[in-house]
Length: 439
Image (tube, rainbow, N blue to C red; front, side, top):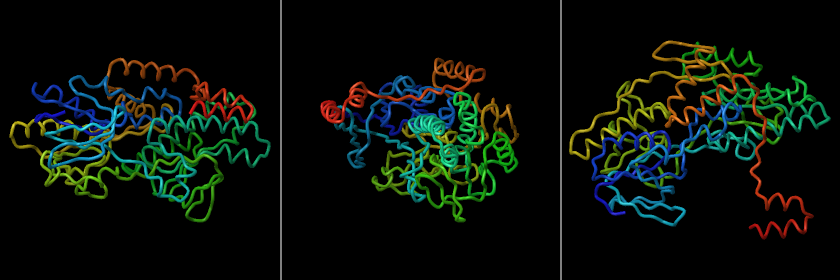
């Protein structure tokens, strides 16, 4: 693709897709807009706990990028190199390598999970960053419930039925509440399991949950989780994770075979490989989100350290700020294309919300505090509004309405191919032959 009027966006998350949708009605007819992403969909990460708790199906928390954009050319591929002199980039796609020329290049490829911050985390813990993680955790919980029912040793039953969540931020609080509700609802289908044989523990090294929110709401979240049976341990940090226990920094240990980690992010390796200025692993930008000494290069979202004109601090890596940055950058790109001055990014947070289980939550909206079902309804309304199409909004609304009146779905989905099922059913020697044929 050779064109001297092309804007290329790398990253299909909140920042990248919002930027593309904001640019489409503004872009002159002779300009091209390209969106490059490794995945063909955007994941609404704040809703992953809803998948873990079976409040929604996994396809409800993702939105196909091709349904979200109209004028934009979408390319599913992985960025491999950027040539700032020739103003081209290289990417790998299903059809092979592709080179794209750009006039303006916007980096919005987010952050990655860090599985190295706790010894044993990579081997034994379950991260919650992707929709696949949420489905895996949900399936693991159902497997553990089935295992508890078949185990005779009382000590082993409690260890298998103990689910530990590490991290008392938004994700940790929400998944702990979702797990507690899911287990309580699903236990009715496992009549041989006693209530005291199942437990959820939340570990948080800070003094209060949800440290990003006012202390009063953190305390309200604590009480809400405790009321649904979650054991919350504050000022408690994991020193190591093993196959059957979590070792705490004070030397104590928690017997558990299922540990969910909601902490730990690391910079995308692309940020370092492009040799751009970094601030704690995030691409350093000017106030207007342009990258210094890199003409035509911009960055936003989680991968970028964007100064916020409201307060002077670096913008936090949240979906709310990613959307606001995308809307501001769309105007700046159009100004730059027209040779006009750009504006510094300045945004005042509208508030923060977190659920603590079904019909429970905490929220701060324009300085006002809400708890309980009101906060929960505000949370759901906010994310329902963020859904990109009316059809998807309707599907999620119907699913939420269904889950309000009926018990959770305990289907354990196994995506097994016919050749794999046949191989498993055959004697060992024949199974090996069938597996080789399938490969």
